[in-house]
Amino acid sequence: MTEQQSPLDRLYVVAQSGGIAAFDLFADGSLTPLADSPFPTGAGTFCVVASPDRSRIYVAAGMGLGMPISLRQTFSPELITFDVRADGGLERAATLRLPRRLTPVSMVVSDDGRNLYLGVGRGPAGFFFGAMAHFRLDENGIPAMAGVPVSLGKILDGAAQPIFSPDRKSLYVASVMAKAVVRLAIHADGSLSTPVDRTLSTGLFPITPVFSLDGQFFYVANEQSATITGFRVGSDGGLTELPGSPYPTGKIPHNPVFSKDGRFVYFANTFSDNITGYEVQPDGALVPAPGSPYATPVGPATVTRSTDGTWLYLVSSPLFKNGSHVVVTSYRIEQDGSLTPSGHDPALTGLRFADGPSAIALPVSS
Image 1 (tube, rainbow, N blue to C red):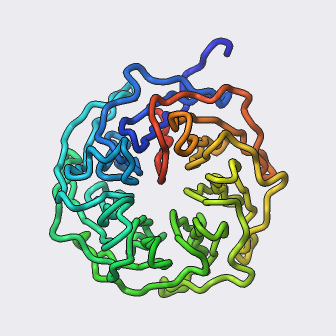
Image 2 (tube, rainbow, N blue to C red):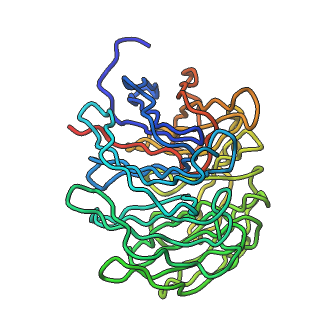
């Protein structure tokens, strides 16, 4: 790499081994690790999220997938708050112990920075007795648990992965084992209702949901069916499956991200070692983007993109072999939605075994 310019974004990555890897991201698609990266956390982390003002980062540690590298955290789940320094480095600000039987999975933070919602369950990946835990965030962004987690309703509800509705009045939660999407209302005080409705997916293991940027359509990856189910979102928030759905993809699709203009959506296919890209049609149908699927390193787990929409970043790790070391690679998002490798070598994270929505890209504050 020639003379380095100022970074445009920073990337934060978590994995089952524990730790947050942090990188400066540059205009040419290259990545440079921050000093002291990775920053220590507990093990079994699936997800990383940031406060709306990007001053704090949250991760939840626990049993994770129930692998040897995360089992040590089984009976000591915790929600960890980090302050983000001006240079992008992280300092642990608070650690909140969670009920010892809970397995934390995935979470979201409200736009006002006052509420955090964490999907939890029992057993590996929280596959059973799924629920949504609500935390209130104080003026310093420190969480406190607000009551008992709200059950999704069934023993087989689990691996709970929430996403806000476009109007921020509901949570839609993918429930993997129950093959469903469960909707909960968000009350004015931030608390959650019991489930409002339940929509079955047409595939096995629905996981990592996403709304189209205009909020008209909702998609969920069916991990065990190698398909994507698409829905139209009704005026009442109900989901109606789209004609032509489900759409074929690679094996074990995960963790989608939309292009900045909302025209394209990309899924990482863990067992196919590729990314599937789709162009979203006016009726919500998904049509493969030119050249899709795109070859990747072994074990693609999640994708995110630069805040200016130019680059797609892939987090990947070989499953159960070669140490499952996590790397990050970058791809240019072309005007037609196709992906072009940046040509930079994969960036080592120092982590092992990526799974879940395990990366976020945040703009560098001016």
